[in-house]
Image (cartoon, rainbow, N blue to C red; front, side):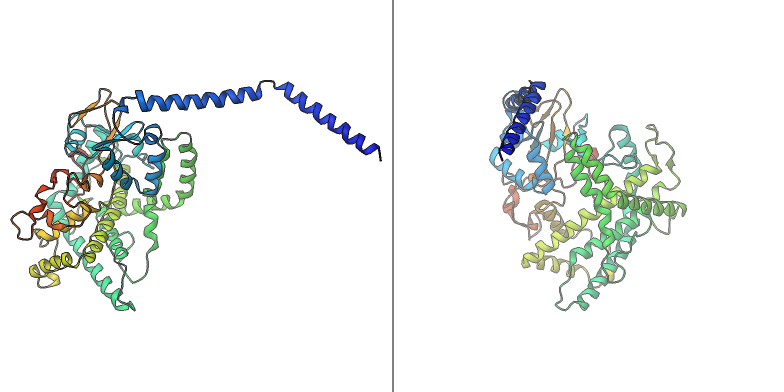
Length: 479
């Protein structure tokens, strides 16, 4: 019995001696670890002090945590609540607010000209651009000569004459949507229908037909659900996450590879479908007198290399990138705007009735309603504008980079290498520029000569309203 305690004691001595030997072998291990941790903490503290006190942007007000880290900004971008937070920040800190170590946002109407129009035109923030998956740029990512060349090639598809010629395509799908709506109402047990879904189907059919030469999925046909549409909008979700992560290297590389792997199959399917449809449309050649779409001005004019000197040319790869980008952007934004306007009108019966009265006074049959005949309806246009002002479908900032020497924005020098922009939602709902900004009042956009106009809205600063941005990079599809 005396042997066991003795053995245990001996083993304990062995363990103690081994531990001591390990410690002696690395006499500075813990000291080095502590030194590294301490150095990093000191670095963070000094960096924070510099950003808060000595950085060129230190003169601009804003929350201190946002001034020393991109994490708060990235969090609200991913949750989709940045515009709500920026509303509160502008209310607290004023016109110009620092929202990141290297970024400020403004809600001054004069900034539209200074940031987006004045030459030399400021470059886009590179971190806000998702690299093209096929290596060919779109209007959203191209810069300089490449952007000018692409815009020159694509702009003819959005000219007034082109839009008039494209009207039969829009009208055809509008009729299909109304027919689908009536079928769903008849089949519904309580008379309720998902109008946002139908708006989504209609815009998808219209935009894909205009972009590819035919509808991609014929979503309005039949009466079933069309889940395939969702796969086309993975790009938008992927882009948002990727753009946030790009500021946190090497996390961006690791998660970027993961996201690319997860979505690869569906993205490849989108590219195959898109390419096949475009090839089929181009093979049909010039269809003048038969149909007009966004590809019509480009038939027979594709370039092999898109040389900078050929401003009106575009390569096949660039065309594919742009047409897919149009579908992703136009379908989502138009669906959101239509659904939002419907919701806001149904919530206010008096405004709904004003629109109903205007439309029914103008048209005596369904056949009389066309793209052309709906132009010039003042209250309808006011409803569209007020929807875009009150709840913009893309409540995002439009970030630009100032040159090394800085840029004057409304008399304030914004230091060089600073990201500066206007959030489309915030500038349209600030109380300093709008009367009752958080209320839906289409009347504010009526002509002053219209008896329905209310003069209390004379105080609105309409120059702040730029729902499609301004300058050479404004939205090509605004019309």
